[in-house]
Amino acid sequence: MRCRNAEWDFMGRTFLVLGLANMALREPAAERRYLEVIDAIIDETLRLEAEHGMHFFLMDYALGGRFVAQPARSTFLDGEIAMMLAARQFVRPDARFAQCLATRVDILLDYMSRSPLLCGESYPNECWLFCNSAAIAAIRLSDCLDGRDHSEFIQRWLATARESLIDADSGLLTSSFTYNGDPIDGPEGSSLWMTTHCLQLVDPKFAEQQYALARRHLARHVFGFGYAREWPESSAGQADVDSGPIVPLLGASAGSSGLAVLGAASSGDAIFLGQLLASLEYAAFPIRKDGELRFAASNQVGDAVLLYAMVQGPLWQKAGKQP
Amino acid sequence: MNVRSILLAAFFAPIAWVTWSVLLLALFAACHLLGWREDTAVFSGTLVDDSNAMSMQVVHGLLYATSFLAASILSPILLIAAAIQALLAKRFS
Image (cartoon, rainbow over all chains, first blue to last red):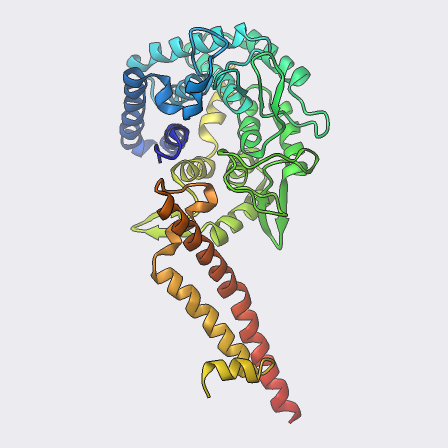
């Protein structure tokens, strides 16, 4: 997995921790068991980052350019690490992670607020909405935990996103752009579904609007089998490492369809969720063994996303109830 | 009468459809028994590093998925069509 894409190793950790946090909140009796795994993942991730630097979890092309904001940091890593820490703390606060989370959030705020569009770089001169919306969700989760208030920054970020990051043709949020805000890629399914999920924490109405647009432009079904396009028909793009291969004619991708399960589950869209699960069961080649389930057509990060999607609810609901 | 002669001589006969159906099921069963289900990971872009092994993974993954679709969609259609055709032939003969 790491040899193919170091990002997948990292994102697999994030979604597994988020999934396990939701499971711990759902089943308090099994909390200790889930926390043991969560802590082991977080400890190892922090150790690897400290020992090898951020490039350990980035794709090789991160070494080929210079980050605009110096000293170089990746919002991809900082945002998802903050999210992992916050999810862990929501299950049961632990003093050894509290300072670590606050520090990571401070770093995110520093880097994001320095950028013209309030978005930090994930790769050199490359900002991703997936990563920045995850960072915003992590900041919100952290505020719920430690009582700090970054709502003014979050509101500014939302206003900037609405003003500068909306694709004119579809009304969808764009997926990637340069540090100064020049577009790189248009709206991309594998980014957008996660973005709508993260927006639910900070602006449910905006999240709902974006989900409805994503549903219109990206969600499709044939005979009850659902899938999600990687790109809207109005702005066709290429297959990339996030999407996986794109099915000709349908425009469907594993990346977008997998994350659409998360989008549909967290938006309470039972119809599309049912259609996506029908496709998963039929065409993702499930393998059931010893009470475990994985999908042969998926991979470590895909399976972790699906787990998180299927146990959706408690973490976001708990955070949503906080003032 | 061997399988080839059945398929060639009576393409629109129930026996040919049943034979095709069994062949498609057998092809899928072979792919499955060879363990090629794991190779469908190519659809998520998850490829092995070695270029020779990668080519084989792509071929195996595509063959597995194609044979699965054929066995799960075409095979039952052919069997049902053969049954209907045989019943109609019996009824009107």
